[in-house]
Amino acid sequence: MTAFALPALTARLPRARRLLAAILLAAGAAAMLAPAAARAQSPVLDKIRDAGTIVLGYRESALPFSFADDKGQPAGYAVDLCLRAAEAARQKLGLKDLKVRWMPLTPQNRIPAVVNGLVDLDCAPNTNSLERQKQVAFSVSHYVSTVRMLVRADSGIRSFGDLRGKTVVTSAGSTGDRHVRRFKGQYGYHDVYAKDHGESFLLLESGRAQAFVMDDVLLAGLRARAKDPSQYVIVGPALSVEQNALMLSKADPEWKRLVDQTLAATFAGPEVAALQQRWFQQPIGSRGINLALAPSGEVRAAWKHPSDAVTE
Image 1 (cartoon, rainbow, N blue to C red):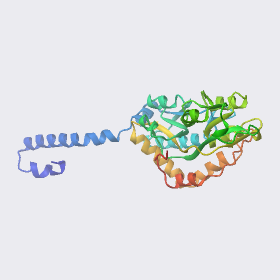
Image 2: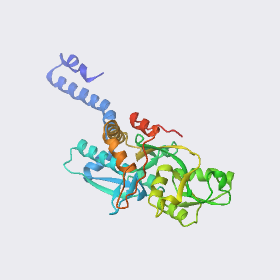
Image 3: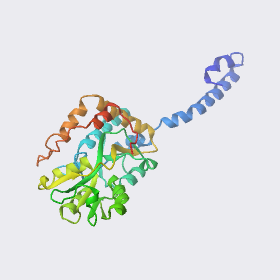
Image 4: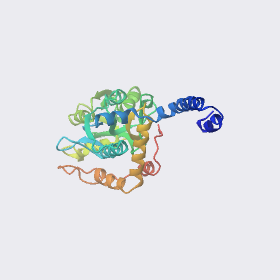
């Protein structure tokens, strides 16, 4: 019985009884509506409102998605997208001002940081995977990359078949991690796991590793920052196609909905082309690092048809 039946039921009752009936029916209607209201609440947005602050995670060496710039400040394509989500939260909450607090994360600690509520949104090229979805949620994809290898140009390494007896590095907790472990027995190489992408590249640069397995866009960014980028090449077949996304709490669908809507609106307008030019096709920072990467067909498709589907 719904609250819309209230007038018909109470018309013939004395005033006191009509009042009591109205109270009881209103209470019943509220009880029926309560679950829906609870589902509409957002713990993350509530926390942001109460604190007047949004906490965003970022990487210190995942150029051009998320990195520390010349002044040590968070910058990059995914960082810019997160700032748009922060502005959407400010507007939705009706706040005059919203402070942004940045927290540097690594591939190893990013999921615990999201699960435990230390960050409200992780602004990086996180690969959306079925395994990770057991713990966290992902926004619609903001970019698409492939996992390959970075090696020295004079190393003679061009495929996994050339790695026998050599050392392969990747960042612990990254997508490259599972590929390195998966092929170790088949190709007979030694594997090492660095704390982040910067350390992984350092092992390659210093000769302690002969190949670095990671998303090709990140590899291109690390190569571009090297003293002599021409010394390094990206080789090998694509081990997987990665849907890169922002990472957030699995327990808050309302927050995810707002983030997804913000990204979809950005992708549908002229802003995304400007972001692509700024971070992938123009000089970055005082060193003028330029990845010179045009958006692939897969990237354009991700922008045209926003989705959080996994492609593994």
